[in-house]
Amino acid sequence: MILLERRPAVGGTTALSIGSLTAADTSYQRRRGIRDNADDLVEDMWKFDETLLTGDAPSLRRLYARESSATLDWLIRHGVAFAGPFPEPPHRVPRMHNVIPNSRSYIARLHEAAVKGGVLIVTRAEVDRLVVEDGTVVGVHAAVDGEDAEFRAERGVVLASGDFSGNSDMRAEHLSNSAAAAVPVNPDAQGFGHRLAADAGAELKNMDLLFGPQLRFPASPKPGLLDRLPTWRWLCRLEALVANNVPPALLRPVVKSLLVSHMSPTDTMFRRGAILVNAKGERFGKEESPAAELALQPDGRGFLVFDGRIAAEFDTPPQHISTAPGIAFAYLKDYRKGRPDLITRAASPKDLAAKFGFDPATIAAAVDSSDLSGELIVLGPVYSMLTVTEGSIAVDEELRVLRADGSTVRGLFAVGGVGQGGMLLKGHGHHIGWAMTSGRLAGTALARTASVPATNK
Image (cartoon, rainbow, N blue to C red; front, side, top):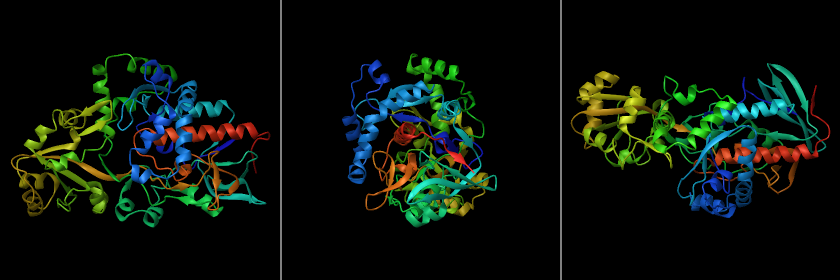
């Protein structure tokens, strides 16, 4: 078996994620006396957006729900450690399992398993076309370090190339202007699998739908504790043991460091009176859809501006700046401690203009258009970012790629973000859950049917 990776190392969008995985009827749930089942998971996933998710790909959602617990067990057997489960409404019971210490653990453990299983991993390999013979996909053509190569596959070809959020042309073709203009979390998500499958006659589904964009702070200039921890197998298990057994209060400092490093500011801040200005200090919208409005501004970059009254509100419960459902909340004081680089105080609009290089009249007009008064606090920069796109290749429950008429493209399979089959996934832990589940099922099915290893020439 051969794995072709376009980048210098394996990882992709999974390595950039928070790393939670949502599953039902798991060993972690049973250990805590939580009764759960796949049918309830299907229903609760649908409740995230009943209108949008009605009729998208219900058979695939049921497949994910039925297999999610087995996927979690499979990952655990490979050495991936989790903490949880944690609640996230509208899920009726805690189902969110958080990887320990972070999403890099998925990459480390599955890379080890692939190498141990005899998988040949070829990096810097960009696939440019599928090899089709007698209507069956039998391999791929790729450029490896600039050299042409053809890889033959007796088992079949599995596309696992992720979404198309990093491809500006595809965003412009399929998405709204604001979503097309947003900054992609993963610029390497170029939609190559979508193009390869379409060239082979596959149907693409729900290419215009997505959840986002969203406001996000840039990464910290200094790696946080969780980013610095090594992903040694024994250490991950020890960390999981601690995380699953110590009082939650002892974990809050670690969780808060995660929140202020990776999470988004809540739109509630704008409803309480904060304003959003662009890189020039202009207030450009009404903050009704702040991320979409910011996406159309230069560089998709802006700043949250608020006063002492709002600062006090978001320094204590019930208001918060960032949240990871069921785990912890981060307040302004947590940002002062964990991300001081994001906070600037100014005595007046003129002072603010001097600190950021804004035109004094421009920022003064922005503040005058609001109810802000007294000392000003700025949180940012903040960007309008696109985490993932939802449009994907049509697949059946065996992850076989489908044409518009329902027939299969023989020899071709798709998993993960490129193989969602039109299924829309909103909420924490669903994208990774589907990626791991679909990949596991496709690999298991192909391994059972294969008798001759893949070759290349």
